[in-house]
Image 1: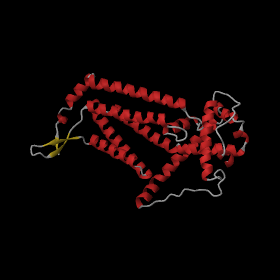
Image 2 (image 1 turned 90 degrees about the horizontal axis):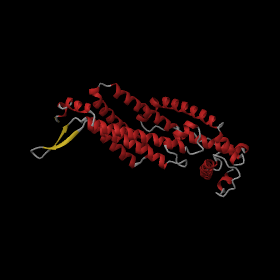
Image 3 (image 1 turned 30 degrees about the horizontal axis):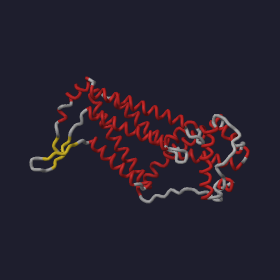
Image 4 (image 1 turned 90 degrees about the vertical axis):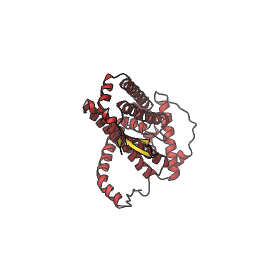
Length: 323
C-alpha cells in the first residue's frame, strides 16, 4: 500500500462521472498527499508495531495543579465531542456523496482492506483535529450569548457602561487565550497580538488620557467614554472578528484546514470534501450581520434621539478624575 501511494501519479483515466466527481477528485488528491507524507515518515503507520502513547509531562507545581483541576472536565468534553463526530461520520457513510466517492474509483475503498483502513484513518485524524476547534467555538458562542443577554437585560441608562465592561473583558479574554497559544507554540506574532489585545482591554476597563500640566509634567487622568465612542469601538471589534472569519474562509484548505472548514465538516460528518457551499453561506451570514450592525451603529451615533438624552445623563461622569 505504501509503495502504491508513494509512487502514484496525477495522470488517471476517469470512467465515472457524477455530480460529486469534481469534489471526489479534489478529495482523493488531499487523501493521497496526506497518505504519501505519512508513509514517507513511517511505512507501517497503518499497522504500527508499537503504539505511540502521548505522555503528559508537568514541569512545575502550577502545571500539576492546572492539570489535576481541568484535565478531567476537558477529557470528558472531548470524549462527548468525539462520540458526536463518530455519529456524524457514520451518517455521512450512508449518504450519496460518500457512496459516490468509493464508487468513482473502481470501489477501491470498499473492496480493498488497506484502502478502507487508510480512508478510516484519514477521517479519524481530521475529526480529532476538529475537537479543540469545537470546544473553542462553543466557548466563544456561550460568551457571546451571555454578553448579549447581559446587555439587553440591563437598564437603558446602564447599557453603555455594561457594553464597555463586556468589551473590556472580551479583549482581555482574547489576550489571555493568545498568551496561552503563544506559550504553547512559541510564536512571536501571537505574543504581539496578546499584548495588543491586553492593552486595548485595559484601556477600555480604565480609560484615560495623557495631559501636560503647567509644570510640563505628564499626567494621567481617568475619563468616561461616551456612548458614541463605545458603539463605534464595538463595531470596530465586530469588524475585526468578521475579517478574521472571512480570512479563514479564503485561505483555508483541506491540506491545512482552518477552523471554519473543520466546523462545517464536523456538522456534516464529511471530512473528505471541502465544504465550499457551507463556507459561502458563512461568508454571506457574516457579511450581512456586519452590514446590519454597521447600519445600526451609524443610526445610534447620528440619528438616535435617545443618545442625546443618555449623553446628558452622563455629563457629570465625563469630568476628568485626577489620579
